[in-house]
Image (cartoon, rainbow, N blue to C red):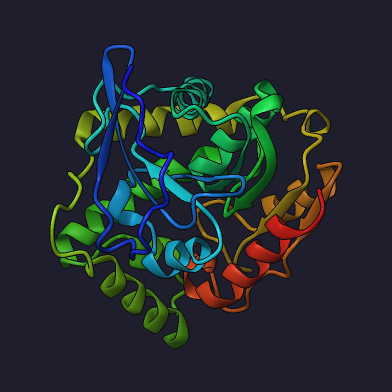
Length: 291
């Protein structure tokens, strides 16, 4: 296992310029990036379906990293990370916990988006000692309404995007209104700001494994969310087509120590990207408040 060099202060940078690092855990490498101040509880970002390091909105990462140490990483088998991609959320959570522990971090905060939110719930429930606070965005509990239909919806949008030469995230993450389309196009432009050392796209094999994991999560028995005793901030757009927004309200109602961000208007699955400035303020206030 390699040891990351995190004992010295890091120079301030932007997510578009920060280097990609590699951490050997067992016999596989995790690709990751980190930026922000070197003190305080680190914030680990858990990625959505098919996402790699370059799919995090730089405005969200840079905004959070202005005051927090932020770490993003590729799931196993995705982008620059080695190994094979698990086909269960529980296995992804074990990998995430293994990565966190290999970094030598005693306690972390989690921000999980969509599939990453599923993973965050399992990490918090199964490894409570690792976690201080959790942010769940555009996500839902096991067995949540409509989650088992995410794979079919995603495949259709991907095929339509290929035919129309349009990124499927535009239709999956944003509303069809003029404001939603503008926000989606601006988001896609931001994702291209990093010009050098970009991450690899997800392979078809890994994509299929993640789709199976999400389908299983959606068909599981409802989660016992009372097991998650950590403070949790819950956020989403008011019109999420992928993980229906009622799941956000369900999470907020069932988590013992939850705080709900009012659902972002005229926004969907990518609500935290569309309203990145407001989300960063809410997230930092939550993370910096007394536990």
